[in-house]
Each structure stands twice: as structure tokens, then as C-alpha cells.
Image (tube, rainbow, N blue to C red):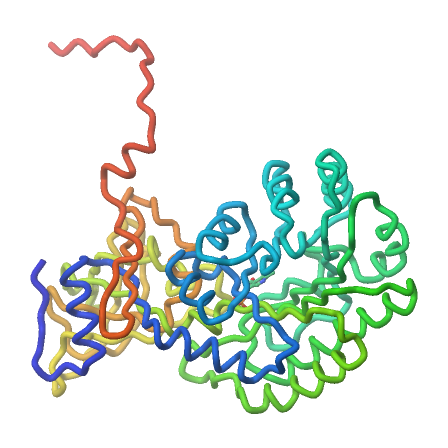
Length: 433
Ligand SMILES: Cc1ncc(COP(=O)(O)O)c(C=O)c1O
């Protein structure tokens, strides 16, 4: 590996360059201090009565979960593997909630055995299934009922509720039928869960959403005279990716959320209030580093071919995003005074869609330069099609207290081939003349 290093680089870029020199590209780089700063800016803006649960779906790397856990974060998991990661990273079962629309029997059984804080029930069928497993194990299982409310969160490009989705039970139906749920054997219903949307940048929208959920809690509590011990209001706090977006105003968030939660807490002091968050905590603290392998002009556009594209950063490529725009990107190998040019940044795939920057302005790029795609800590590593062209998943590196730590090694050809099974189909060798 031969990377271009310029002597005018700032500390962060020097650290990035040294790390990729050591571990190779493509790679995800995480700034540990930034992760903690983001996490604490959220917890500091919430009253003590609220617990923040880190959503592993955003980035399940065990070292990152451990770092967050060591600063007090609880965990929200959506598969048995995420649950085992959370436990291995130091979470206690009582600080885990488990949700998701498809929980397999063996996953549910494990969650019942472990006595996690709550299995979040997504349907009536799932409620019966959990009850059956609890009876078999002669236990009482703690659950929360996930509702799909009649209200949808403003300002969220991905709405999980307030419209037909595979998540939760319709608000009206659940309110009508809660009496039946409360009678299901071997099940203790702790309360309710709602996750209505993600990537919200408007504090008022998170507030309105939360207020609505706390009100549903109130309605059910009064109607059925329950003593709920949990309300999970989701979250959806976003980060800006594009030029015309502004950061979530954390001061405004605090001013709105603190009185709302404190008022709720004074009425329901025994109810644990949960907010879930992932993108806000990890997003801006993660960077993807790719190396420039080739530069060419094609039909009058200049293409930079890099060793990491949509196969390892689907989020930057726009997959799953409503608007396809460029993630912020920088050529960290360029000189301070390099001219700015316009480029198309592609990855290594034989697919015209493998573009992670369109008509993007970068300081002059040369072969072997390192490009950094910013705000990549959320979903890039966890939701990309890493096996396309059998390139495998990139390395992940944690930069913390001035040191770099490899926290996931890059997949090798052997890793990928070893997962495949070559069966003996008793095929005759072709006869070559
Ligand atoms: C139920 C649930 N919890 C947590 C999250 C993480 O949300 P975010 O990316 O907004 O931090 C999501 C994201 O879709 C979710 O569906």
C-alpha cells in the first residue's frame, strides 16, 4: 500500500492516513471521543428519568457497543446475534429491549430464558408465542406492546408508524384489546413501545411525537387501571448529511423534552422511560476511507474509481434514502492549495449504479489518494451489500485516546470462500479435444 501523505495535513487526517496505512482500505474509521460526545450531548439534554438505549442496527460493532456501555448506554437489539453482542459488550439483560417484526422461535426462547427487560411484541400471534415459551419454561416473561399509532412523525423521511407497516399493532385495535393482552398467561406487560420515524432534525417534531405516545400510555393506563413499568417512545433524532440541512437544535430539544418527561415522571415515577437512538450517536463519528485506484475521463466526465463503493457504503450511495445526494467527502491526501475539480466517485463494482459521489467538487485527486466519506458511522457498515463481487466487508478501526485499534478485520477471499460449500455432484470432467 502506498498512500500519498502531505505535510500540511491536520491531526485528524494524519491519524486517518496512518490508520489506513496500517490496516488497509476500504475501512471504516470511528472517533471514540466523538461517539462519547454525541452520546453525552443526548443524555445531557434529557432528564435523569430517561434511559437512552443504543440501537445496534445502526452499527453493531462490539467494541463500539462496549465503549457506549462503559458510558452508561443500554441496548436495543433486533436479532439474537445483536443480543449476544450486547451481552458480550457488558450489557445486563435488564438493560436490553428486543424488537423486530420477525423473531424466530429460538430467538424468542433465548430472550425468555435471559429475562431481558422487555421483548417488544409486534403482533398478537407473537404475544401468544411468547406466552407459550414462558409457560414451557415455567416463567413470567416481561414484554411491551409495540403500537403503530394513528399519528406520524413530521420531518421523518422514513415513517415506521402512522401508515400501514409491518410494525406493531394498530393503536385503536390495541387500545380496544389491551384487556385481553393483560390476561395472557405467563406474560407481564410492562408497557408500550412506539418507533415512529428516523432522521428527524426538528426538535419540535420529536417532542410532538413523544407527547402523542405518552398520551396513549395515559389512555391505556386509565382505561385498564394498569401499573406499567415501561414506556419506550423511540426517538428518531437525526444528523444533517447535506448542505441545506441543519443540525438538530439540542438546546431546543432539551427545553421541550425535559419538562415533558419530568411531568410524566412525576405522574408515573415507577415507569422506566426509554428513548432509542443510533444515528445521532454514531453517524457523525464514523468515516469511510477509500483509496483511489484509477482516474479516467469518460464521455467528458472525470471518474475516480475507488476501492470502496456501494458494496460497503450503501447509505452514501442513496440506497434506502429518499433523496439521492452526496454525502460530505474530502480528499485528505490533497495539498492545501490544490485546485478544486468536479468528479464522479465510483466504487469497484461492475455496476453503473456504483457511484458514491455525483458531480462532486474535491481538491485535485491523484491515484493512491485517500478519500474520506464523512457522517458514515450509521448504517453504512451494517446495511451494505458487502458480498457483491465477493469483495467482502471492510475493516473497522476505532481511534481512541490517540491510538488506533482494529475492531473488525477486512474480509479475506478465504473468509468468503470458506463459507461456501463445494459439493461433489459426481460431474464428469469435460472432455477437451
Ligand atoms: C425500532 C427502531 N429503533 C431504533 C432505530 C434507530 O433509529 P435511528 O437511526 O433514528 O437512530 C430504528 C431505526 O429505524 C428503529 O426502527
